[in-house]
Image (cartoon, rainbow, N blue to C red):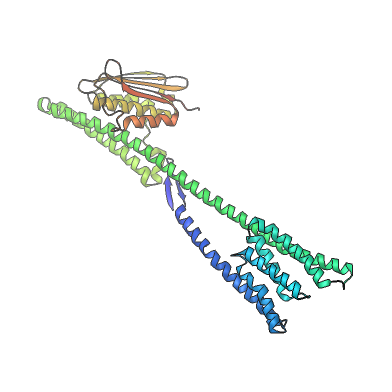
Length: 407
């Protein structure tokens, strides 16, 4: 069984489709053996009946009945051959013998088999042949000795028995086709469930990867810059280095707490509660900017609108886009870089623009970094827009439009 944890903390279990299909094929592989074995027993039982009740008065009678019954061994493996052989033997009996025989019952079993297991053309041909045999048998057995009423009753009786045997076989064929259709549908549903589980698993992995990248990359970038500053300040202003080290410690503890929350989503159902999820919102942008300013990055923040009214999903995406854009500025902007963040809330969206005057990122679109990719994946969830690249006159610019979710 394969398990899947969703972003809401529940677990869905899907069947191992390969194992189910293998077991189904193994069972189907035994069916021919079961069929031939049952048919051998059936033919043997039919041959034994006249001996047990004394219907076979001579060895010749027993041989004739055995010849009629013996083709039933192949009634499922080769229904057309079995039915045709019995019909030919009955035709020969009509010419050689003027009375019915016990072995004639083989025609009823052959009719059932060809209606149940034969090809479609043979199904209807078998019915026609069976009804024709009823007419021929009535004419042969009654001859000119019986009155028309007796002949009619005999013909109707034989035709009814023939049709009943054929109809039972046809109903068995229909039921088997219905069961096969249900099995195929169940197998298709199993395959669909497995595919949906794979898609959901890939989406969940991408979501977790985005969160871990945003948490780890941002925090480590801040800590590296602060550590470099502390190293420089330790030589000239030790008291400032001590304060910077405290900031590094605080940032590390905060990042470690967020990492534990993320790992809790993967390890424990109870930890998947929404209170444990790292879900900063648009209203937390000021804290983000203050944290980066403490790292030495000059940032101007301009917010239009009440970001506290932004829904949680849009707020998280807004926060992560600004965070990633500023983290890239911190990592790739070079010395003395400054950035400006403009966030405007409209009636239907949140519009973001982050500019810096640094030397720009060299890994934004070359496949080596994951930040820009993460932005595009987040925006794709909201059917929004994002653009990132060098801006005219130098520096780097990230613009995004995040649609607001309907209340």
